[in-house]
Structures are given as C-alpha cells and as structure tokens.
Amino acid sequence: MVFVNGSKWQGIRMRIGYARVSTLDQHLDLQISALKASGCELIFHDRISGAQRKRPRLSVALRTLKRGDTLVVWKMDRIGRSVMHFVNLISRLQSRGVQFLSLTESFDTSSASGRLMMHMLGAFAEFEKEVIQERTRAGLAAAREKGQLLGRRPSLSAEQQAEIIKLVASGSELPKDLAKRFDVHPRTIRRCLIRGAAGD
Image (cartoon, rainbow, N blue to C red; front, side):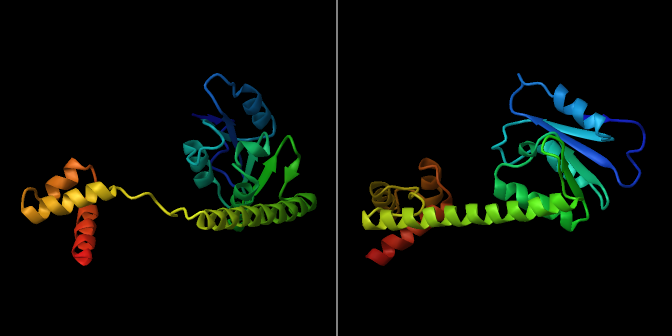
C-alpha cells in the first residue's frame, strides 16, 4: 500500500518514506506517523523479515526516487540487512543524486556529519567483508585438512549412477525416462553416461 500526503508527489525534490515491520502482528502506525510528520509525500511499506532479500515495496520506492529526492526511514535497520548491504544501498542512491535520511539516528547524507558517518560505515562494511572472506577461507582450509569434499553434493549417488549406466547400456531405459525417474535434469544423466564411458 502507498500512502500519499498531499498532491505534490509529481513534483521535484520529494521526500519518499519507507516503513517495514517483520510480522503481520506488528504495527506500522508509529513509523508512518513519523514519516508523515517529516514531510514525506509518498510512503511505501513492507511486512517482511529484515533478512529477506526481496522487499517488493522497497523496490518500488527505489524506482520512484529521482535526482534531488530523499529516501526517509524511521530507523536505519528498516532497509539494511547488514552494514555492507546498507552502505551499498545508500551509495547507489547517492550515485543517482538521491539523499537518505534516518529520523531516529538523525543520519542525513545531505549534511557534512552524515557524509562523515557514511565514510565510517563504509570502513566497517569493508572490515565486515574481509572478516567473512577470512572465515570462509579458514573454513575451506579446515575442511580440506579433514579430507571433506567441497562443493555442491552430487544429484545422484554412486549407486544410482552405476544403475543408470547399466540400464542405458542394456537398452532397458532411455536417458530421458531415467531423468524423470531420478528427478534430475537430462543433462545430469548425459554427464553420468559420459563419465561412465570415460571410465570404461
């Protein structure tokens, strides 16, 4: 749903609000009241967990914003899944000439203090990224030392692959029928047969 304040929504330099709650039991009233009081002419909202990547109304709000506009939220965590995600989103807005304002934290990218805070958050985001990469590398190295197989688990077990090769070789079943029976893509069956032929 979109709430409209007044009739200036087609003008330039709009304030567009975004509100979000995680569940149907939570209420948007506080956020919407604060956004209206700040001068937002359009307000979009989602009822969805902050961890979800897809937020339909946020996507609409971002598409609606034009150069000179300001995206306004009640709190910074209403739009960011993480520091990294938040910084990337705000950076993309700034590259389009769109400002960002969080009412609770008084975080305004049009101000000198807001731009300073963005630089600090950018540094934290880079640190967060490096920590994640380091943990991933450490985890992979530990798995290799234990002799664990890395990557996606095969769609077919060794026994199933052997059965498929035997059935096709004997002419009992066609590859397309085996793909349906084992619930895999026909390409998976073809790769299995190629590996079987190479093994022979």
